[in-house]
Length: 192
Image (tube, rainbow, N blue to C red; front, top):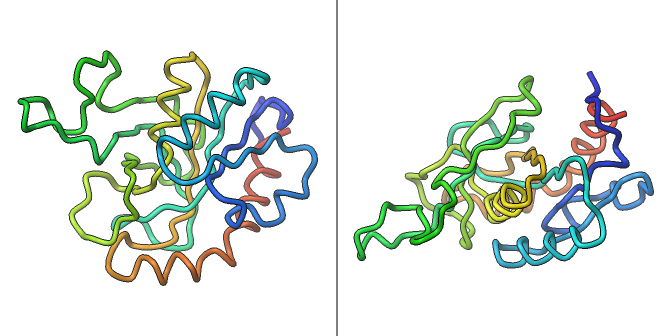
């Protein structure tokens, strides 16, 4: 079932070209690569929004999860900054002090047919158990925050590449070969 938003009005944001595969060749997709991490994601999206105001920013990419099965697409519409910790000064964990943004940023749920979870972003490739969120990545929170502040709809679909555990690096490298076709099919099915 396709959305009422035309693909030409969507800005697709991915961290790395290696995750995009064949999507790079599709001239109908407004696609930017933000690089790894929250700072790069914030900078590249903010820079792009000066020239193009999309109806929807869609983050596609890989993520770890100890809850969802590997090699599947999942969605997120709730986001937390998993590496923000100023508890030593008495602040709530994951909250940026003196910032009015909620600790958990919530956007509309665009893809209810996909399993959905809280996405925790941080500037660390996670290889340890005990996550604060069901989906672990490095950019989505930053992208979600920019969109929240700018009043732009934001959606996030992640390919679960690994378990965010001690095998995460090897599993991520193996999954890269599979994901671009998943994203290509997803975009063709969901947008006009």
